[in-house]
Image (cartoon, rainbow, N blue to C red; front, top):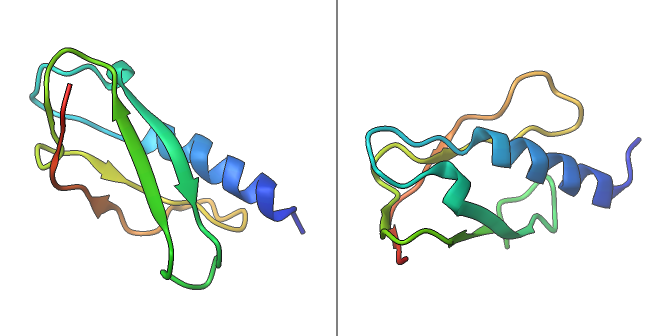
Amino acid sequence: MKHNSENKFYWAARSIAAVVVFGISVSSADVFITEITDPQNSSTTGRYVELYNSGSVDLDLSTGWALQRWTNANTDPQSPKDLTGTIPA
């Protein structure tokens, strides 16, 4: 069994790869996951991801951005979570 911090790192690394954008001028290289919390793997209580936009253009997350989560050595992710809102430049 992996240590909880290893699972969080794995989730973060896989999540970074899973953030996808379509049809906007902001580069995915401008968006960083700056904080992740997943205190109870079996619960949705207290989970969040903080994103930072280092680019020069506001980012509308409703234009195709989503996160996917892999857990416990699964080869397939859980259902994607579409993102909403805007991250200012």
